[in-house]
Amino acid sequence: MIRHAWHFYYALIFVFKVVSEALVLRASHLNKALCCIR
Image (cartoon, rainbow, N blue to C red):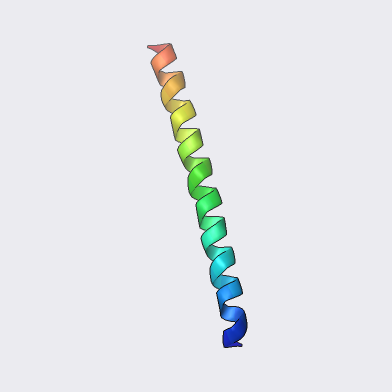
């Protein structure tokens, strides 16, 4: 059971990284759009 725990941990960190990167990309696109509108 404990042997598989690191797998779960690794997957969790990977998902968190992907989600945070997606949010950062979306935020930067929104900022660019707002700058263009102004």
